[in-house]
Length: 369
Image (cartoon, rainbow, N blue to C red; front, top):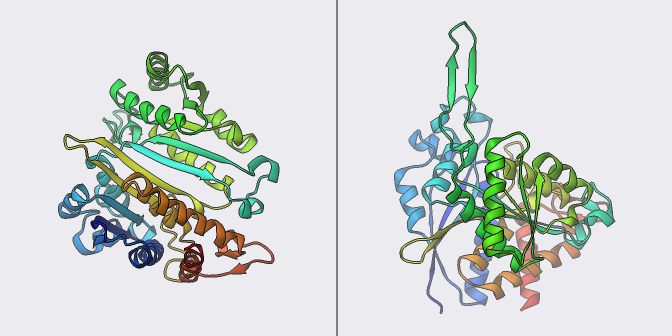
């Protein structure tokens, strides 16, 4: 038996516990069929943590996340906590984990499975074979910049403000990841910002251009404004390989890219740190979709984005490429068999719930081995 890996499970809110439950099935299957063991601890984050502790994440859970080999997160948030103080809202827990774990590199792949081409709202020829990767800087930018707040104006009225801030070091380390990933893929990077209207965007372009010239001249680099990138994603998405962008634009563009695949329920993500002094890379894996409180507890959620996030965990945190490939193939086979959750349902297919989708994947994995 291989040495056990230490995983922290943070199911969170809404459909989070349901989709994370399907990952448990995969882990049990790996233990029985691939002699791979995981030590799993579970904690609270988001609204679930607020209900128990009046905060979005506890110091103890943050410490557990820092110590774990990897973190699997479900989803956070919901209208129930809309009026909670900002520092205690569910999203604050997620932001704190990202910041304290220094998870600056957010990898969001957007792949179109052949079986789901018709689930996309775009034409077959536009999305068939699509395979792009968005490298979103995750721990800086406008979501963390200071000053921020709401103030009364001297002459009456009020103003709200946030600050977009990037240092050259923050841009460089994100760009290194994007260029290195591109070398293993299609060897092209689109760096996306708003250099035409934002000083931070102009600075971003200058820093990326300099790094490219000095260290990555063998990789194709193109620059693109964020608004044009959004348009190009729905016009001609296959022109992209790796998209490098900041926190705010990455948030928007990755959701846009998700819909190219047919559903947010199909899009995984990985968030990685750099190596610490001991060579450890901290990591958190989560589906791109939200907590979907309108369907929570009804066994309607699509667990495949979370399962594919676990596949990324196997690949990036544990160097278990064979197991990740097996899991990816299992997902492909389930879709080829015509099994669908409601978000990706098509005429003539078999609609199932969250748990049944997990069971169907286990069936396909058993066939593969």
